[in-house]
Amino acid sequence: MKKCMFIVFLILGVVGCNQQDVVDFNSDSTLTVKERVENNDDFQLINEVEDEDKVRMIIDIFNNVNWDTDTHRDMPLPHYRLNNYDIWVTPSGDMLEIINQSNDYYVRLSKENSEVLFEIITGKELKSR
Image (cartoon, rainbow, N blue to C red; front, side, top):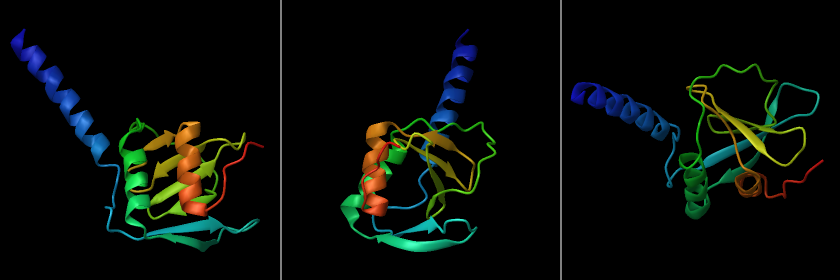
């Protein structure tokens, strides 16, 4: 019985550690934000996030959400790119969906986190459609 409990805790520990591998930048990083050019596959630079407090806020959001690690989603081209992350605005316009390009982890942010992240990366308010 003790051996089974050890194995369960070991598996949970490994899964928990994987969640921490989502963020591939630190508070000293400069984050580049690119927006997809309408009716085109190209992206243009729209912002660079250099403020340490804003970068920390993004790190906190990314570290405190439950990333889906078992996913392969077919998604259209993203609306935005933040370094190694593809970002979509949901059809309702009130939430963001993110995929980490390096490991395909996926998350749909809460409305609150979506509003905060969108304002940091674009300087605009996220508005429902």
